[in-house]
Image 1: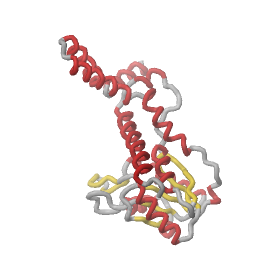
Image 2: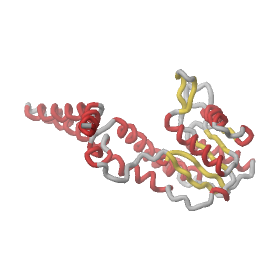
Image 3: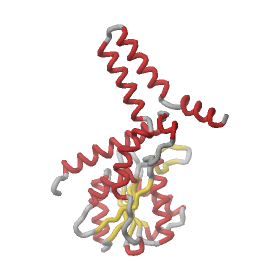
Image 4: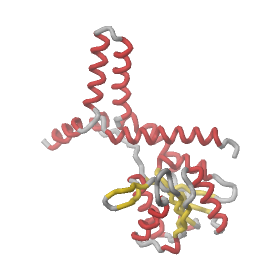
Length: 252
C-alpha cells in the first residue's frame, strides 16, 4: 500500500498532467487536420516529458559533474579555500539568506576548514538590485558555523564567474597564496575551473551538490518531476556558459 500511495503522489505532484494534456491536444489537432498545431503540441509534450525524467536528464548532468570528481591531491598541501557564491534570497522571514544552491557549498567549506584550517576566500558581489554582497551574507553563515572571522577574506566586486576569477586571483596573489581549493556545485565546476585557470596559481576542484543519478531507479526514473526541469535549466545554463566563455575569452 505504501508503494501505491508513493507512486500515486509522484504522478499527481508532477508535470505528468500537463504532458498528457499536450500530447492529447496534439492528437486531437492532428485528427482535425491542424497539422502544425498538432505536431507542435505533441512535440512539446514529448520534450517536457524527457526533460523532467531522471533517465534522460541525468546523462547531460553527469557529463558535467564527472569532469572534476576525482580529487587527486592532498588537502593539507593546499594553502587556501575559494568559495564561489551561488546567490542569496532577500526579504524572507529570516531576512537575507544564502540561496538554496549555496547552502551545501557553505557547509562543504566549513567541513574542509574544520579538518584542515586555511584562509577562506568568499567571492561574490552585489548582483542586480541586491543591497548587500553575496559574500558578506555567506561570511555570516560561516562565522555562525564556528569559522574564525580572521580566516575569512571577502571579494565583493564580482558579478559573474569570470569576475569571480579575476578579483579572487588578485587577492590571492597579494596574499601570496598559490594553491587554492575551489568549492562550488559539481555542475558548475567545469566552467569554473576553465575560468580560474592561471599560470601563477594552481586551483584544485572540490565539487558538491551532485544532482545526476548514476543508477536506474526503476519506475521512478520514468516518472516526470519538477525538480528535473529545474536541473535541466541549470544544465543548459552551464553548457551555454562554457561555450560563451570559450568564445568570448578565447586565448585570454
